[in-house]
Figure 1 (tube, chains in turn green, yellow):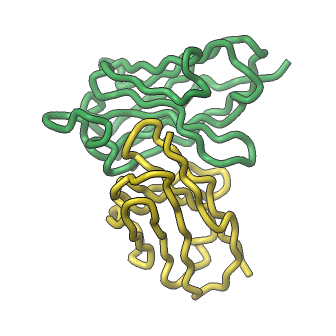
Figure 2 (cartoon, chains in turn cyan, red):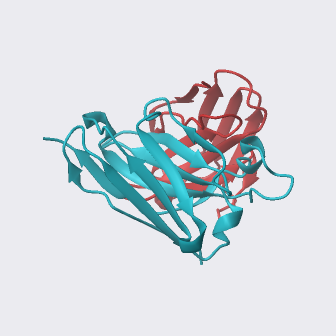
Length: 131
Length: 107
């Protein structure tokens, strides 16, 4: 059974930093691109970032570019999101999500491995940015 | 960036009704369109990928159609457990934008 468990969310002051983790199990972590998606209280879903299966390619929403860094540790089957220079509008529940299509072999472009959407999600971790 | 526009933003329906939600992309995304269902306090759940392929385990009353810039999600006979918010997302090109969501409520 695929499992994704986020952690690291808490109350942090504006300008502060936080690192979120997403521990995974039940699938071959090194074969799949991974994503962070957030949801502000009472609002819709916002894609934040994607990292390829190798970690060699990363993509960010304009709203977090230059402040957030996505990474992964294959030995720990864990995804991370380093969040710096946090602002009030970063307050949200942060979900990690696994792509459905393996990012292996000939499927090396995000267009290819994004075809199947994100088929597994964690329950999210809440980040609150406030003084 | 590709903008995704869902309509309506909310709707009310009876159990048994046929419900259709529309998602429009600001430029062609061929069939790189996915639909998710989200219930309060829960993570999103993938329903449809590639515009029309039903995710494993999802009831057949859910269906998706469309290509290019216009897509629809149809629930053929609404059940009580289908009351939720539905989101479309394009994965044709980065950033992987979501639509604003459609909340399906009880009439």
